[in-house]
Amino acid sequence: MKILFRATGDFMAAVRRDLSRRHPFAHERVGFITARAAQGHDHLVVLAEDYHPVADNDYVPDPSVGAMIGQEALRKALELALLKPVGVFHVHLHGLPAGRRLWFSPIDLREQVKFVPDFFKVRRNMPHGAIVLSPYSAAGRVWLRPDEIVNFSEFVEVDAQVSIRKSSQDGSTDFYA
Image 1 (tube, rainbow, N blue to C red):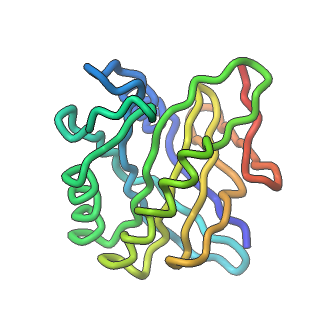
Image 2: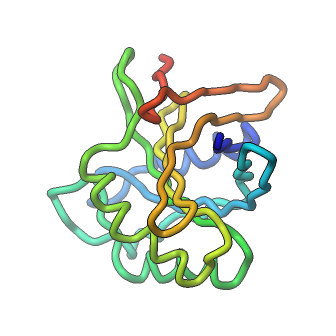
């Protein structure tokens, strides 16, 4: 099954701008994208709806990672799915040198499996997941169930110009400088 992510260019530009802001001690910012989903015959379309940045005081100092968010940030994200019929996608930004493939770090992958399945406790009928952005691309993983993880097949940003980023088999995307 193909999993497609769709958002407007303006929406994604606003998310990238927010994630690019400096934090008093964290080396990167984190947010959550809420999304609706539409099932097709052989594909699932995830439609970005809103962006929710993690509040400055919800970060926890931890020099071993780029950003560590606390329990309050996760509670707020879980509440998004509890109060509305949406999927929730953890999102952050990687700045990459030209020519590198965009994908999650080993720490990102390890931590995702600890918290993403929790969203199914409050909204079991929606996909949830994690997205990593670069200034020009996106890559991500989707949990269809707490124990079923697939990579996004494609990211589409719709604007005056449509930008399509197809994922490779490992889920990564090319970084365009």
